Amino acid sequence: MLRLAAIGCSLSALLVACEVRPPTVEVAYAVEGMHCDGCAQAIVAEVSEVKGVRSVKCTFESKQAVIVLDDATSLAEAERAITKLGYTISPAAAAMAPAASAQPPASR
Image 1: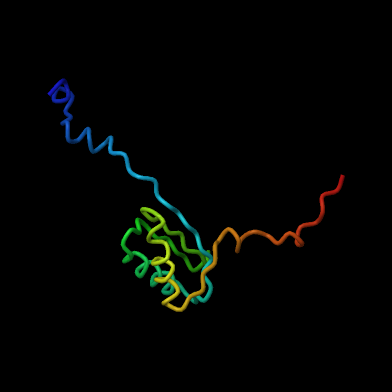
Image 2: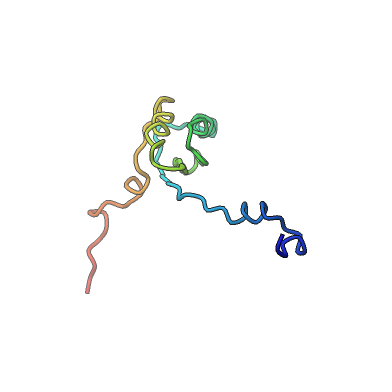
């Protein structure tokens, strides 16, 4: 096995270490309607069951859910998993961005 055995590696271990994973899709949502940590835990449990979801993070404190998916094909189902629990979601970037009128004009 070429010199892999001499350094304690097998060809299969080398192939696993070099595995190329397809890119993932990460989406963040502002979640309205959560009242406690139990709400966030329910969202994590429900969204984790969706096929194609790699990870879910949701906290009551941030009022956000961040979902990492294998690809965008599972996005609608992940969103439905949250809304069927009774929560309202919106893209976090839009929800977190300050309104243009709230910023004072730049002075020169």
